[in-house]
Length: 159
Image (cartoon, rainbow, N blue to C red; front, side, top):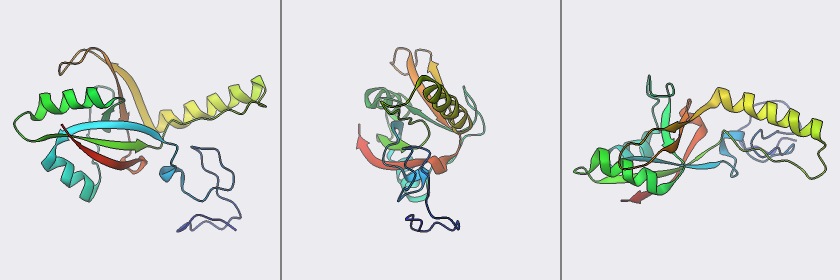
């Protein structure tokens, strides 16, 4: 019997695409093995995001979605740059879009197949890019999550 609370599918087991658990007790979007990402903003907007969730932008440097950095210091620089007079904060989140695990027993063909499946899955959910120097940061890796339902807020950091 499916262990995922709230699952409406009629099946025995629930497969988590993120952690590859074939008898998961969680939806993929709630997998604890997601990627930690950071969003620099103001306290006012952070309160709205925590209450109502993220909203995707209609456009951006690497497409529509919600933009993040991979490190807390980069997100702090962005928050300070954009909201220095308006209580800058950083929202720490989990993105459930790009985790892949390989087993020691996997042969090369299985690993190649997993990488291809992982890449196809991620491409539909998020874009990654290297942002040119901006907001007192050198080049930094940015992540654009296309659909906010794949983002879970973990913590709001004061800057």
